[in-house]
Image (cartoon, rainbow, N blue to C red; front, side, top):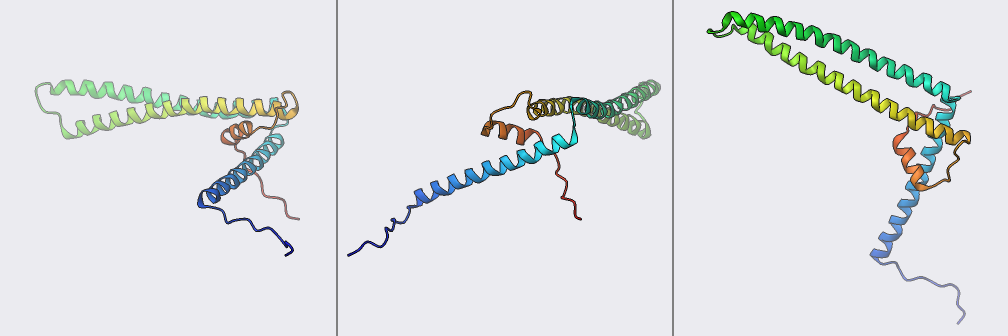
Length: 173
């Protein structure tokens, strides 16, 4: 007989699972590389240079700082209100507090907590914004040629997980 072709033995479940896992890993790496390429293109089209990046960062941080300042002013007013309510409770040292005064005190305490939480959240956002723009700055330098990195899975993973830029739909026309 003449051999027409060789037929491999069917893969075992373990071999099939290993092959599927390897294919999945290759797809994930390709998707991460494509996402990184889109992110890099968006970064380059959004910021011509570091000066543009600094302007955008300063604008974003300025808005957050205005929010913090507003919340701090509200907090000052709430503390003044709290002091007034505390003074009002002095009239009722040996008597139960009226229900409306109790409600005002409870609302004031809730508002104080909310304002403090808002301030803390905005300050955290400021730090996150600074870190995000620092990552953008580093990547922009790399893309502009200052620090051209070797393409590696680790770099793709880092940039894909920390930097996302929305990609505009292609123009029709």
